[in-house]
Length: 279
Length: 285
Image 1 (cartoon, rainbow over the protein chains, first blue to last red):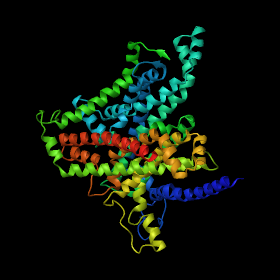
Image 2 (cartoon, rainbow over the protein chains, first blue to last red; image 1 turned 180 degrees about the horizontal axis):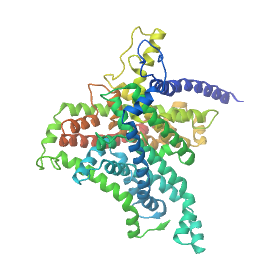
Image 3 (tube, rainbow over the protein chains, first blue to last red; image 1 turned 135 degrees about the horizontal axis):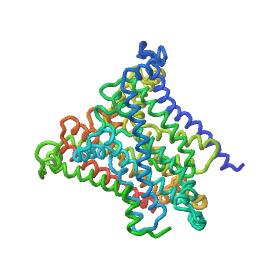
Image 4 (cartoon, each protein chain N blue to C red; image 1 turned 45 degrees about the vertical axis):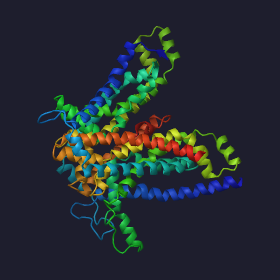
């Protein structure tokens, strides 16, 4: 082993250990504390000078579930997100087809323009979209948030699906046509097998983004239409209840991280985080 | 690729691009029009520059503007600067590199509100950080770190959340640099810093600009981090805009802030991208 390679190996080992320490402070401590706070027994508060909670239980989880609007927020979020995902997929598909399979002048400009919702700060979009909906006489909160989320997440869906459409092999389409396949059969045999991971990835990404979206849900939904992020915000704002916030934080994070990991598996070739830019 | 007929192309672009343009155009139009007195939800709607003149004379608006600019600049520059060495380190796979990459990218999957909550838990008066410092004997009474006056907490959160994003964008660009190019520079006597400024930075300039622009826009429009972990004496532009709209129903004044925020996000990010290009060209020479 040459000296340079050996030095590099030693450096890598040192950096890995250093990073493990950073990761401990970076992730384990914050999440560990959130888990501990969520398990603080409601009858035995955790306060100074106790280093650890005096008593752990799932009492706080039960209390939050029974005495707050969390179940309603979960129903709202988990009804909204799949609806948004399906509608966004349906609306994005034709534009993605054009970007992935058609040749036309100004394609570069179209690719930039579909990213517009990502370039406008979320609360600007939320506030003035709400003004627009009032002007149009749309007062249904579910419908308003559904529309807002669909527009906000169209860029992600279009970007993922246009990559998938671009991967469909023209020879396979031509072969299916030459064999006398109907347009529907051509779609199911030539397009669908290639599009399937992209469709699933789009559904999952839009689902996760919709569950997590805060600005539009907060502005358009307040005060009576709650989603999981808006209920979390209520526990972090004026009505700061740390153990409740810990419970809702974990409910918000854990399923979405699991879904994003599934997504990583679906999109091994293209890093989904690269497409999502979520936060 | 097939050449599309204008009719088919129009039909394809209408549900996606058409909807985006209609919605975003309407939102921008609403904001600009309301800032000039139109689209009033109550009272008379007529052209007026009153809201702009009041807004531009308001010290609160300018404080919020420069505060958001500061957070966006610190957040975007630090995230990109810290992500570069990590991207270079992880450029070629080695034992444990996948784990490291996953750990570094993990904060990206954490919701902004959750991130702020986790952070506040750690730095609170009797939080983990203070307790450790007390236990180690470094301090003899807890430090008040939460909602610090400058906004370091918000800047830290921006960096925590955005390093993974910058890392993802820069990794692709850094991995695209051929080993031959870097080895040639090394053979010519370039040290690590010279290789960075003369080879890596120019070849990854587009990715660097993309990361800076996206992070800057997000940080300029921040609401969640500021409300939970930011200084209580300062407001971000988004926070100030929401307060105007929510508390007094001052839609027109909120619209002025919104237009200013859009200008800050777009113009600021463009200037930052341009400055990055000029800096890279200058240090390369």
